[in-house]
Image (cartoon, rainbow, N blue to C red):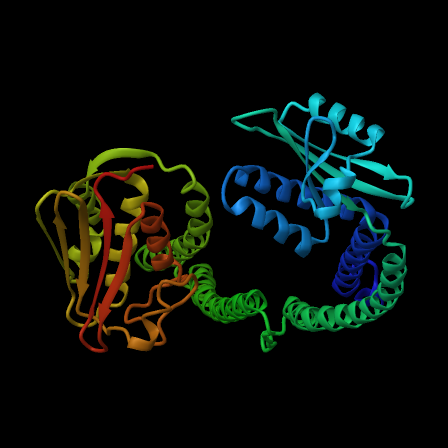
Length: 473
């Protein structure tokens, strides 16, 4: 329980991140709505007045100018005047204005001209305090160029309305929103963290059970694709581990039997030499030959057990060279001459096309050896073994056919696994570690090739591999 609720747990991390995110959002809202609202309001209002002023300047001299001036003045609630060079109001004027001749205050007009002439553009926007209204105003000024006579000035003036009351309202609203948001964020973060972490915790428990050797564990999926992918991957790994464990147990059982038989014979014939045939040279030699043969079987068994690990380690650095697969296969077959001369085996070899390739000659020869040895071990009364090679510009295919007991379809997916041996006993009393075909697959895959088998019970088998003729490292 402590691990689930600890500071490094997924639940706690998600809750912390979610609450931190919510707090940051609230802080930003408070800063924008309370602390910086005056600056934002002033900036937005200034940009708005500048946009209106520039639009009116662009329309000056057209028929739409006067109507647009009136529309903007009423719709936006701003004061818009056209001034002459003395600060007098030229537009708009009513009947009384022709008598009064209204004009801008001298100080205000002087500031207006200074701001306008200091501007690099033909317009200016600035703020000034309005003494009579006791408020700050935004002033926009621009030069209106006339073709005949002196230029006029566009003068726009609007009050920056105080927003203190608005800020107070926003504060009260934000307090309520903040409390509600924090409560909802806390609840939602707890819900989401539990929802997300629950399947991960379940997968962790199952993985712990798998580590304890229980292969019946189930990895449950969650509501997220990534978790489902993780569960599928671990389930597949569990199946592979279970299969490897079963193969390991079968291997131990098989190897125990294969070790026990020759050891028993060695002991029995040794005792016979000691007690019976010690002085009979013919009998003693026969018994010694049996001991030597059984010792050879044990040596081959131990060599097979070491070969897979050794070859897998050496495959990291392939010794690439150019050689002919047919020639190497002929050299390999010379090692099986005993079975041809003494046990009636008939081994034929044929080839079509190019059989030269670039690869690790010793390791590919080992693969050929293992396939020939496998064909001999599983042959029945028909002791024919046919080897065929077919080559083209890109690849070489090696196939070996025997007329032995064959392989059931359901077993064909497992024969390439290390330690696996067919369900039926061998015809010949040979030991086998069950790693010969696994070595073949390992070597071929290291050369970026492919392996396969075609077989039916009672009809023999065809094992094959395909190698690229020019392997690009």
